Length: 419
Image 1 (cartoon, rainbow, N blue to C red):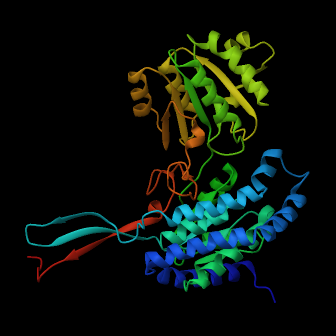
Image 2: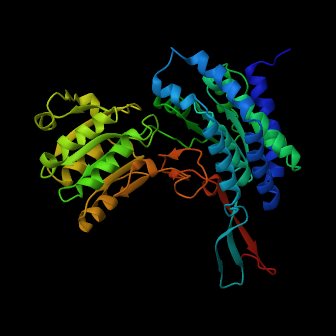
Image 3: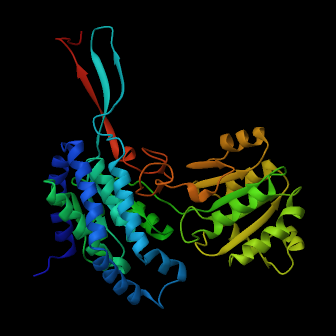
């Protein structure tokens, strides 16, 4: 007889809590062996994973957008990418036990802040099954247990992936229960997970704006938000036009369905006449539909007029809004009003403007002369990521193994007491 969602979730969370205590004490060697075994298992079982994924894709086809279907689809190269991500995580320094700082008090006390795992992490995410492997790998390396709840659209893929990962843990003598997948599509399971503040230490939601906001409103467990990305690139007056074009096309078209893809292009008035016609042509060749302000429309005939709603839109598709602005101040003001704090970029040859932009723009990642698509745990040398946190507490930006730890004080004395 199948358990009701609340009982199922509590059972999984309790076994994850037990596994977390064991994972916290796992030697680095064991964790790395587990990650390597996970990578091997994914490659060896790639056809099983792809078959499960085909069932998910066929069920979703015709009911979701092209961008959504792209996020859902696995290929042989994406399976290998998952495996490579796990290998890279294995090669990272182990954060557990690292001494963040230490000092000696006048009374002789030796005090250290030491990194320790968070415990049990509840990870709620949508559509992208490769995220299952990333999240599990990061939690294993950081000595945590994880309860995974993927979207119903990827249920077959996620079950297949999680089965491989759990078996890999068993093979190296680590607890398989450290990677738990909630294998029901009943939404009551998510609500039940959010109630378990005595068993779960952190909830990380990764998906659409509606999901993240709903989780944040309803969770009794602390939430680390991966919020939406209304991402900007500002092309300054003295920017290198060739560099700007390459960065903009990459940021928008390389993979438009993800949160760090460009959504609004801001162009300094002085460079707009020479930049925009050719850049619009390049974007059109890449399949990007353009929406622009009146000044943009004057330079790019036939462009769709932008509305006020476009400046706040996260398209996650081959759509780009363009606005001509007076100067750096106007660009920063636009970003302050419409940005969501995930990633922002400037293309400029003016060092002073670059410094002002990085100082004054408030986002988890601020880039100079580089594509926003680089804001990613893998691209930052972190192996993978649980998401890009737009929260201000605990962690901000790509969430990797170090961000999945907290600290404790270790105090060594020789008989000291308080007067």
